[in-house]
Structures are given as structure tokens and as C-alpha cells.
Image 1 (cartoon, rainbow, N blue to C red):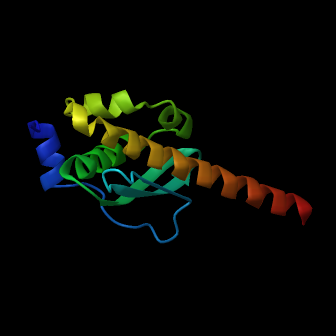
Image 2 (image 1 turned 90 degrees about the vertical axis):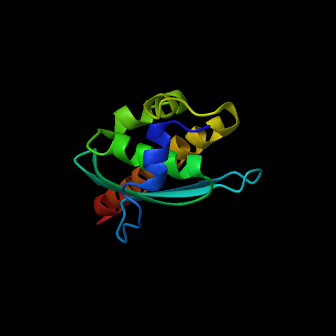
Length: 131
């Protein structure tokens, strides 16, 4: 059912964990299948310098989180915002049709983390201007 790339990321997930002082945090879940993902980002000069995640879910959800964390490290925020669910699935060598929704969760969680980062940055810039 799963190819070797997916199995590798499931058996040896990369970048698992929490960034305590994350610049952005994004959480998504799918009530139907029970998968939950939280992504934590560190950003410097509009570039993602670190990405960690916590995932509760099936093997595909764990593999997707691992792959997404690898895909986004070192990338500019705009590049990541342009990534699609299909990009994630392709990097994993394809997901079984019933697991494609997992690729949606991974990139959606990262984009929520970027939105959180942007909101915090805008709030900090507003505060600095008011001082």
C-alpha cells in the first residue's frame, strides 16, 4: 500500500518536536479520520530556518508531516505559500487515494503557521510604530 519513501518517513520521521519560541504555529485536524498536525516555524529574513511538528494520526499523516518539514526548511515564505497538496504527494512518490487528504493537512498546517507568523509580525510592527 505504501511506497518506500512513505515508509522511510514513517519509520524515521524527521524534525519531530516543538519549537518553544516558535515564530508561527499552525494546527489542523480532520475529524473524519482523526489526524491532527501542529507545525512550529522559526523564521529569519523571511526564510524558514527551522520547522518542527507534532502529529497524531496514521502512517501517511506522519510521513506527510516529516516530508513537509524537510521540503520547507531553507525556503522563502512566498515559495512555501505557493506549494500545493500535489507537491507534497509527488515528493512522497504518491499517496494511496484514500490517504491523499493527509497531504492537504500537512501543507495546510504550514500555511496556518505562516499566517500566524505574519499576524504576529504585523502586530509587532504596529506596536513598534506606536511607541
